Length: 345
Ligand SMILES: Cc1ncc(COP(=O)(O)O)c(C=O)c1O
Image 1 (tube, protein in one colour):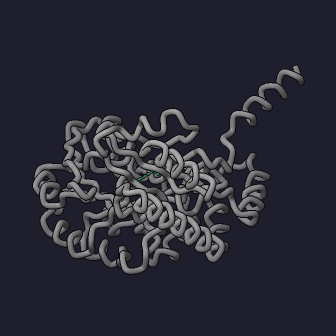
Image 2 (cartoon, helix red, strand yellow):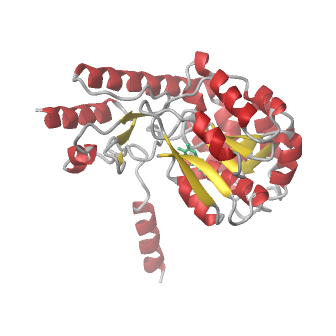
């Protein structure tokens, strides 16, 4: 029996994805394994694994609120940004309501809409991979929720603050705007804006963020949202009891303590992205001006899928022939460039 248990454990451990895999470029994960300080804090949390976490994640909420610069009661915590988005949909929608999103968008959104039994209304991106914010504001007129991703997934493009403000002024106050900032930490300073000030001005905006991307904790599933206190009260009412694992608080605390090492990793990822884009451009291959941890190559007559099909690279291809490639290490970049070079010959 004991042997059988070990076998099952060995199989489960063996099935874990490897932390460092230069070919895994399809999910916009962080290419670095957790920092040693984060790892050791997590081990301590696991030692208390027989105990429940906080009934509601008040401490995590306070920690994040302080870092973001909002009041505790403006923050909600989720099982990833995914959990936050589902909490928003449970709190503010009824089956049959409309949810506006771009096409293409983060794969999760059509699934979330379906789970909440909403009608997805899709608005195509423009030819440069940007949101058509005017068309989205028109569609939002009779929708319950509208989603803007900044940076966008899959194109990595960033709408200007002025365009976002113009859009928000057109959206009805009873339509909730999900401003998805899953990749916000990768933005260059001139693309950043004061999100707490934005939610103070627009009571229907929920800013959604995650520890899955820049913080490299995708497997631990922690995300958060913040918004005006009145809306946050409704969202917090959907906070599942004991819903955030005991590892969540220490993982976030240790990550905040390791801010300078994490910033260094972010700089390495964005430098690698710039390098890949520059090399692609020198081969005559256009990619969008992606401000996240991935690049996006729009369709080019033939399908990018075919270019990567016979390689070991895992990338995310799109029905229209485009492809999104997560930035990994230099080995990943070399593999991408050599696949593209081979296709061009
Ligand atoms: C734009 C966007 N929003 C949300 C998410 C979900 O992230 P999480 O892992 O926090 O659930 C992703 C994940 O890829 C994403 O790209």
